[in-house]
Image (cartoon, rainbow, N blue to C red; front, side, top):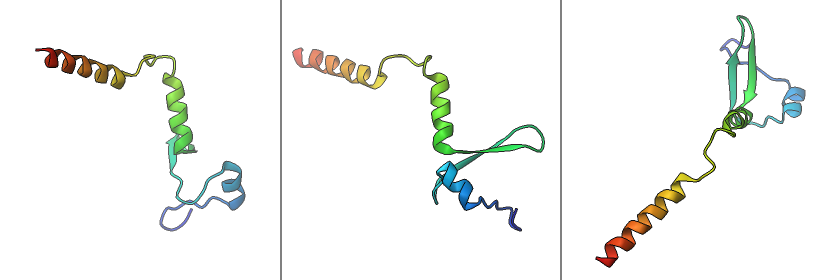
Length: 78
C-alpha cells in the first residue's frame, strides 16, 4: 500500500488477470478485513448472467417502434 492509499499489482498478476492500463476495477468488500478485486467487465458479465433467465425474451424498443408505426399508419388513413 502506497502512502496515498494506492495499491500496486505486480506485473505477473496483471498479466495473469489480463488487466491492461486504463481498465476499470471493482473493489468488493467481503468480511471484515477482506476484499476482492474484479474487473468491471467481469462484474457486469456476472450481473447479466444472474438475470439472464428472468429477462423477457422480447425487445421492448422494437415493440415500441412497431406500435408507433401502426399509430402513424392509422393517422395517415384519416
